[in-house]
Length: 131
View: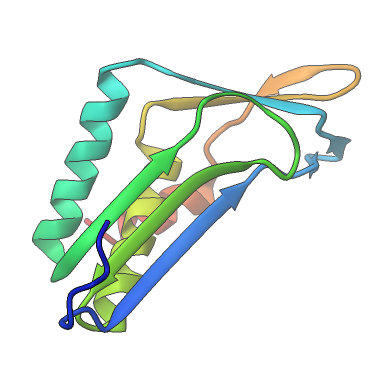
């Protein structure tokens, strides 16, 4: 991503991190799984849709997978646009899509158990506003 353009008036970024506590338990590790090939196509699709909806100069999505520890960064979204409103909306849109529709699966591990992370109703509601 190059931010040298004089037409860029705003750069918005979001970093998602692994929490150390969830659903009443201390998290010791998170495993993120994905389908190679399918995941990349999905990320390109959401990038293209964001570019169609908003006047974006550039954007990047970086999403990790594998074993992650509490405080590790999971996802980075950066959006550059002429104006801040376009950049904020595009960034929110991308994150709502990633939380609900991107082919990533999260498993939280504690000292005594492990569980797959389920989609929350609030995540689905957030995605509805973009339809």
